[in-house]
Length: 261
Image (cartoon, rainbow, N blue to C red; front, top):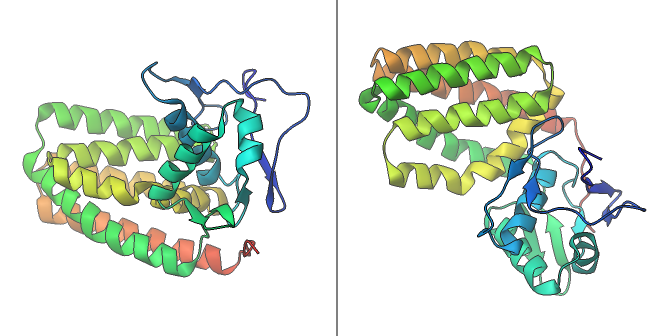
């Protein structure tokens, strides 16, 4: 339980609904353990709220790769009809986190070398370019925001909680993307963001030293952006992504996930 709200869990290959638990409040979404809840606007649909919960549990591996997400069990968990559950699963599938197969239902997408390579090949190109554009286009307000996000990242690291660090890291990279001032570029990055989140979360859990590497590299990246050194900023971002890609590849090699059969 987190602040009185139930947390979903997965054992083996099936979604397990904890006993003696109250209705999950899907109006309040938790990013991770220990993080303050986010109150969602009333206009957010029930399906979107459910999708956010599922996304978070998939990213932090409470729902392991290959795990089944059974409609009937989700209906019981959220106390809703099948319609919003099905729509939520479609939304999560559109972000690459779930695969829906005819007559077999929904399963959490696998984490493997092929998927990792595809995600990081795209990240390398898109985020490297976004960092370069951020250095060319950032203004004083952007610089203040980036410095603030870096301080938040350092603070999260001091608390020795990978989940908090992951959240702060996402906010920092989002700020870099926004500083590029390109709606299209940000939209493209976000199409693969949630797939990438799974690997970033895994990296911080399994290789905690990557958190300090992230702080050091992001400090250099932000300095380059603020000094308008666009090519340097891009190179530093690409080096950070390549290093993370290599380390995550090694982590995946030592892990075994269910094949979902």
